[in-house]
Length: 347
Image (cartoon, rainbow, N blue to C red; front, side, top):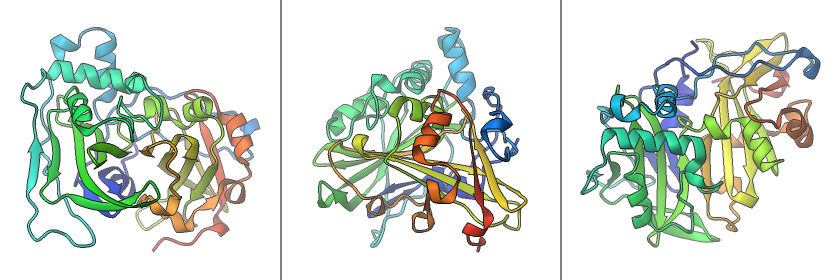
């Protein structure tokens, strides 16, 4: 099993609200993965990269879904709150005293009911499409209603005193408050992590870590369900870092549904090319906001090397229409190559 990289852990644990960074210090651990589809044939790619096992499915999630599907959830699943202590900061002026605030429901649901709700949302996204996530839609869902829904699959919601932020929204800088939500499996492993920015008592932005996003939002499924992205950007490095790390990012931007999806995986250097294969188990970080609110990528503060990203057609041999035509089917592999000479060395 290929362990989650430091870069991946930072991306998963740091959910960005423009002007405010809500960072949760989390430990990523490997676990058995559901089987992935077979890799594409060599005919579809000049040099077939070495496939890797996926690392984006969260620990315990595959088992949780399987138990829900066998209707054994009520009898066997329990949820234990994570023992990890979040570390929260705010920029550029952190409050002099950070006081963690944990919100808990007045009538908590049973652990088995929460586990069932997680499994259902992983499978159907709460019955909605992006930018809506797990039944919560930016710009539409009021925070009090979102909170009622969040209690369905999380034992607590965390924020902190003076958790105000200023961010780009509806063409101007607006202030609001940030909340983080996590769900854990019976071993205390994190299986879902999301952050909600609330402006004027309405959910404004949702940022989701890539723990539970692969089931519906792997690259092939997104291309099949949402078509060609307006932008597809790539970033990587020219060679391995000292410990063998060679991270590859693919960003898909769908402004018509106000969503950015960021896929991150460890690549291989094959001769003078950087090669990577994303499969059906590789979920993205999702950043979504209200439909109709045009937000340039540089205003989103995505915690990735955006300034170094290159258009897909420049970085690889594929155009966006070719990417969609070749890999736009559910649970398909998406293999990409890029010349190492295009990219800087790692610091």
